[in-house]
Amino acid sequence: GENVEQHPSTLSVQEGDSAVIKCTYSDSASNYFPWYKQELGKRPQLIIDIRSNVGEKKDQRIAVTLNKTAKHFSLHITETQPEDSAVYFCAAISNRDDKIIFGKGTRLHILP
Amino acid sequence: DVKVTQSSRYLVKRTGEKVFLECVQDMDHENMFWYRQDPGLGLRLIYFSYDVKMKEKGDIPEGYSVSREKKERFSLILESASTNQTSMYLCASNGQKYSPLHFGNGTRLTVT
Image (cartoon, rainbow over all chains, first blue to last red; front, side):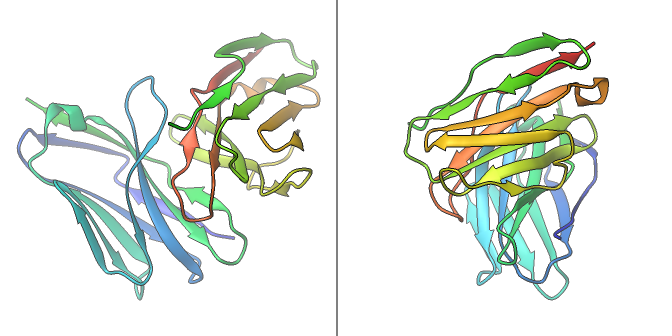
């Protein structure tokens, strides 16, 4: 089945700097890659997603890139703000079995 | 706005008890999922369902079962609760395979 690896587990960046979180997946049949943000004490919520027929997608300060050959996708947050502090999860969905498999999460700290 | 409601926010049960975690969604979603969330392990898929009376095993189904008698309700059952099932349990739903997951607030289960 699908396996999603996420790095780093913890990331601290100065407010205003950029943050990058990386994920790799194992199943070449995976074709949809969402990212979820979970603030402390709250439920995870989708922030951006990308399908396998697209290499990059951007939404204001957030962007996701996908390298299908390397089975690698990344979340980029620019001009980070205090409200970006949260746990971020990447996920992958495979055509093979329809499971939505998550990475282990990255705790992002935005330093003042 | 989609609402996914989990019946209990906090639950304390004894080892060996049968435990029912209930989840209801109000958007006529076809797909429902149960995850458990543990520090450092991310969100792990226990079971999911794509239709009434249909269920599929996730990555960690051992010790759990599910029931989906009605489209809006997906129940997670711990047949004989054990201490290693102490965790945060998250229910989620979506209407289509590649649409955002909507999560409930979670049930924090403690088994003593």
